[in-house]
Length: 328
Image (cartoon, rainbow, N blue to C red):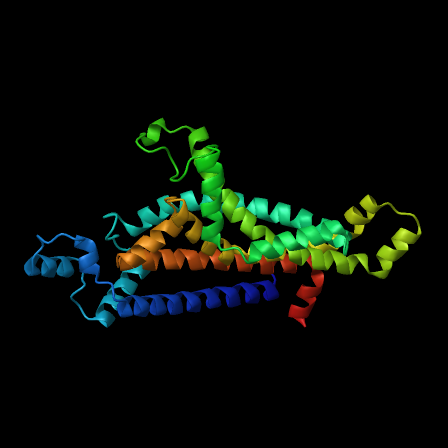
């Protein structure tokens, strides 16, 4: 491994560690300032739980200790590999996150691929047809998407495709009242369509508009004008000149969209009652489940940081000029 590569990886690893520590501290402070009482959220609306029982519950979960002591105990256990137990699910945090993350990963993965491919194609078409009807329609479509709230689009899809047309289920990831072993792959896919469609449609706009601008710039360059002058076909220009120059920024932007993808998944999972990581983070915040919320915060940061790191690595691998700048 080259020295420049080792330095690059060390810097990124050090940055990740500092971000994780800062995130944990900020998340803990915000939960402490929250008006939600974890014990009240734990017992619910039951009036049969007396003061003594509430005190025992607080002692069991360590809620009666000072905040600094609780944070240090949690942080120490994290370093030892123990992420604690979820107050909501009564299971280890890592087990809950693993189950929820797999569900969210399927949703985000499909949406990520669809939004990237469709946005890239539409962006190239709009850039090539700059100023024409196709460009105006695609640009207007993307600007409408940017200003559309995620939850509103999800509700609209439910009303049209689930309620009126009846093509897809309204919510959940599996049919209600069916055992997990009896759920078929087709059932899971049918419940995944609307959430994935909502998330992917909203992710198209940024990729499309960015690709459109880059494509339009390429189409105005001297070498493209020269290719047109010598009679090169439009298809040849697109594949030999446009795609090669536009693909790197588009791929980079696609990996940088991990944070937007995760944030959008939270709203989508709430609208469709989809039992993924986004739904779990909302529940843990509303019910004061600090171990689960802290665990999800760590996993989400690693997930987003991985996307950013992948974009940086792709830049270094594909574009040699960046490696030369780092060496210099």
